[in-house]
Image 1 (cartoon, rainbow, N blue to C red):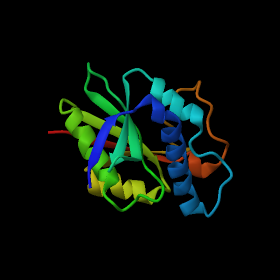
Image 2: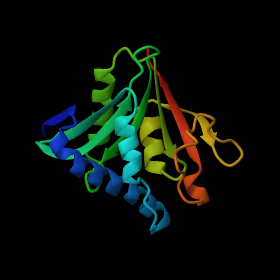
Image 3: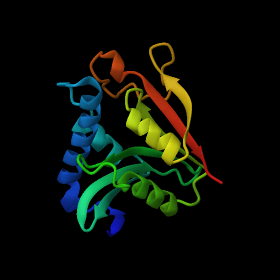
Image 4: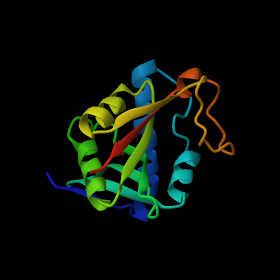
Length: 174
């Protein structure tokens, strides 16, 4: 099988967003059986794609779009952020996520610290970041400990407690 991580082709943007939304939605459905709330609204993807230092990548397996990622790169501090990473629904368990992450690390070898976040209920993500990618949980955001870096202009998800609790991960590079 041939894996490639390439800059996002603008022709694939709509499919990239749709697949990412389906993947994130499935994570919530797997945990809560059902939800009628958009877990990852398109405006959040657009915000990530247009952020300063943003780079988007599509993952191809044998030429088929199977995932992707958006990273935020700070060339000054080299404290970089994995903003979004997804594996297309139905493609899990084939090493795609690990291949995406490995390729990202190779693309940015000057990174000092990688940071990312995931909701508390995403056990699959927590396992992936800690056990597969070498991240460490460094903070837990909840109603008693809010993210002080959160942009107040961003409209929060509806007041549902299980969407307010997030882990923050860091990976210090050698």
